[in-house]
Length: 373
Ligand SMILES: [Fe+2]
Image (tube, rainbow, N blue to C red; front, top):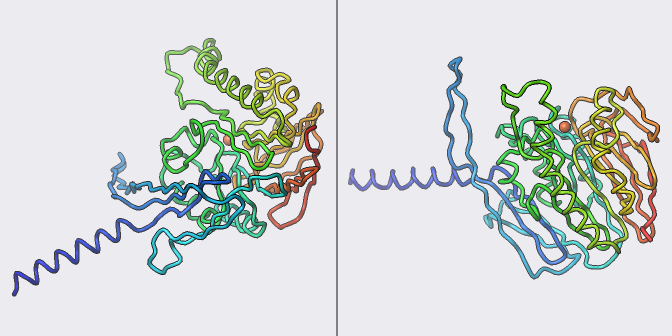
């Protein structure tokens, strides 16, 4: 009898252990929506190894297992409810809406630099949920350190209610540090670094302004430093530019083109103006030539709208990170505001309206762009 009890006890303990470890920690969240397909992702806790630091501090490093299901043969512009647990709890439930396959009005939201001040990030996320956008784009620096799992834990906790119903498209920022976690957690088109998707006749291109995470070796002298960085990245960025050329040639007839990357082409933060000169030199008149209407970026923690030769350059990086000075307005500057905010974009049949909304719900700017000819 004692032996049987002991065996039962082991079975129960094993079952409990199994349940605990397969608990959903991140998600469920929606990725890669099209008019016919969708991907639902979630993560479970796998193990909890620890690391001991030189000062004797012991820190647990949680390991997550990534899960995803790919749904095909869905109907365009249709809502589907899902339940990844099927156990009656709300934990595994969500609703996804496929993109429309025809040209019709829709709205999406852009925010950026959500990497710190989690209370601010939380408030911004609540305001975005109220707007019920078709999808969300984050212009990068989603977390403080992309290689620290604790930061992703904060990110997914804050975005839990948003991401279970609204697809979330990320842009790689310098703080993501080209981390394997980024590629594990997000399920994205192309090489996941730069990619595009379409909704109706609107094209959304996500670029990578960061490249591979490289450290400069200590034997590189100061005088060779610029050349080291240039040589390290020139092939990568030239390849990306060629890819973008092909994408824009293929999609010549679209009504709207939105391009996103983390680093700005126009900065109003004095210490960063020089860097933007280099970036503009690299791109030249590329975006004007291809009639890109809106170029959106993060990195400078405030709102800035610049305009040149038909292209709107918008910095939206007010999602949480501490705000930056606006101490160097440029000749192309139209408006700026040092405030936490996000951008709600309404795509209409003849125009698109960008509403810049601050953390208090006030509209701080409104930009209207016409459909491309
Ligand atoms: Fe940044």
